[in-house]
Image (cartoon, rainbow, N blue to C red; front, side, top):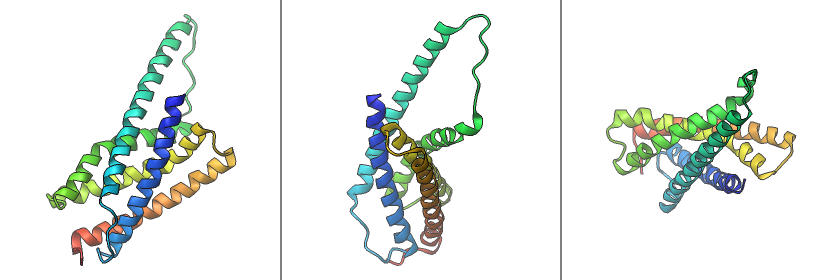
Length: 190
């Protein structure tokens, strides 16, 4: 459980930094580069935290899967029924896992885009918006899960956090896509 709590704290810090990074660069893109950029080292710190969070998440998932398989094998009897599934309740978990993997895969392209001035353009015109969507989808469902892991909040507060995070991430995503379009296709003024 300690590893889960450490990962939850790292996840919350990463979510806060990612919202800051996405929000700032969204405003920067919407202004078409007319405002000063923030410190260049913050995105690299964020990338490192994302990688640490991803590695811990994978380790926890593998550890839990192994434990579940061992328990299932030990408790099986010839007449045991298959466990019940709750697909509707698991949708946020599926979104979290799929968007996390997608975000991790696209993180290299996101960083490479900055280094290569987003060349080849057609590749980045597709990859960057998908990366934005994956990162913000991951955050929108993950913050409340981290809070639950850390024992923060009541069921009502967690529900409110889910709604607030979905709205914040949705607004940032729409604004980021507009800003990215302005900068990418119409150029940066600065």
